[in-house]
Length: 369
Image (spheres, rainbow, N blue to C red):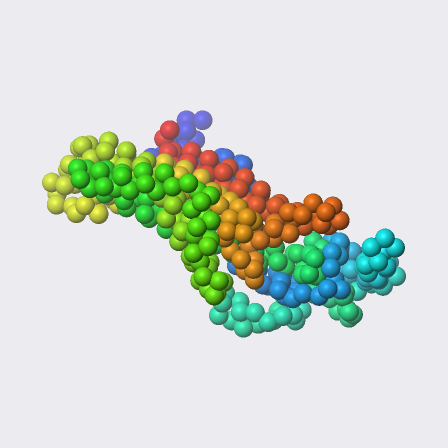
């Protein structure tokens, strides 16, 4: 027992800060599971086009509101993945042509099939996709989550929307984190007129009403802008109004730390202001920065989703979670096609995963606590 205890104590004494953080994080099972979920979502975002089964922008009125299909793995005891074919039936009330599964027709499902062309990682042109069908005719295809009113495959649109929504959150948090730490650090370190100016700027930004601000910004964005331009504009705008809370937290910490002995010693040793901030002051409250970042990421994602849902953010033909949820606004449409709400599932999962992950990382960032 003593030997084991000594060995454990030696490991703790010789471990680096990163090792101590990782060992404690692994004990937080919910945070580890959340990390895996977040990692899977970002991995899916990277390979979104590869995971899509059809062109997310392709419309076909004949495929309107096709319900979700399941993939059957076996056929007469043999492993033959397939989906049921579709047959059109005229609705006696609405006189619309409704497609229903036809068990008599089985369409084989294959892996790594050719489909619509895209660029992997934005660099490598290819047309390979994870799933596809062999011998499909007419409206037949793989509709894992069904189709929308325009006949677009909801699964393909959802995986592509994941890439856009998650990347906006990541880019927005990175920019707001840099602004918050930089301006908050300068405000707390220098004080005086600089501190007063930055704090008045923060108060002005925080006093602007959110909804009128977004409505004005949405009206200011030119309709002639491309999807890429609107994407970067929305990311920049969300970042510029989200940095204030972190800046105030950073300012308060810097005010408390600038009189500490290790900061004064670094100044007397000739260290520059940026080195003091980055190497001495920021690491001392890294857990607070991690907590703020973990909370800011889901807020960014929800902000983009909400704005796009209200028509104030990204606009079609861009695809994001908020744009997909716009189709679920109509109660009558939703009553006949409830699968349109499936776009809300990844939003809920990601928000919960980020919050649990943030709790685990925040606790692990202080291994001696």
